[in-house]
Image (cartoon, rainbow, N blue to C red; front, side):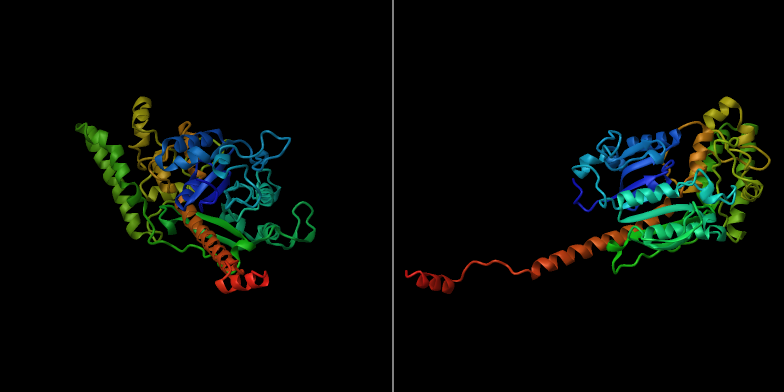
Length: 433
């Protein structure tokens, strides 16, 4: 195997617990590096890549890098032994070079632009757009994908969006540091707009609008057109997404018989009634409100602010916390809160992951709160997948186009042919033979 076998390669920064990585993987991309600062999320990435059969390529060729993306050095630097990718060298046949990467992707931190935060934008120390732009310039990948919260599309951030676009494709914009307007040369990309995609349009049982920027190198795009994905069908309700797992959570108590079985059946029936009614009657099809992962600075895990908790209550779910699994719940005697509360059952981490669109076989490391934050802060894999496939379509079409052009140019070159018999006779005559 080598870099010429048409493998689509990617590097992802701010990878979290793998939401975007899973989607891009399902879209056909192979990860050369996943960069993440949270140690629990890094452990999640490492454990799933190590454990899951479908991730054998990444086991061999992907660097999972634990650390600040500001210190990430993907290209080798002569006097920096910590620079350059390590495991991908075996696939690439040497160090990664500028212009060789297919896709640079990242869900850069959302607090600078989130409606739930202070909206400091470029003044927020967590704004990693500058580092993303530096990496675009360093790596010069064929395509760029940046994901963020819908808030970045607000009018107050128009100047900052224009600046990012100008850095990528050239044009006039105000430099964030000074506010002065200047013309930027650009890195040679065409920005395919900032599109807001609603997760529920792509099979995710949750209202989760995300702003996605796609930019493709102009020499790659050429006469091709990037086409944004469209909705894949009717929204999937929380009832449809969680019915089986809810029954599984109540089953141990149903099987005990007696009073506890009656209580369990009553609670399960009450949840089903509310959730199925919401699926039938609510305009949104009974999907969940946006999961909120929160930060290490703010308390334990719950399902969001007051409005979100009220929406969960309409779905028969208590949003006041995250439930323990069966064994831990029995040990801590928390099932009265977790399963039998007056507002309905709380979600487990695994159920929250289902609401976020994670596959069932993806497991999370760390304590319950750390796991929930990984889930709540993730980019839904199905949304990453449809955007990734749209990018892959362009990259593959560009490769086929360029190969065809090369073949046609070779065909048009004059070919050296062996001399005909008449030519050989003339040669002998001139030589006096």
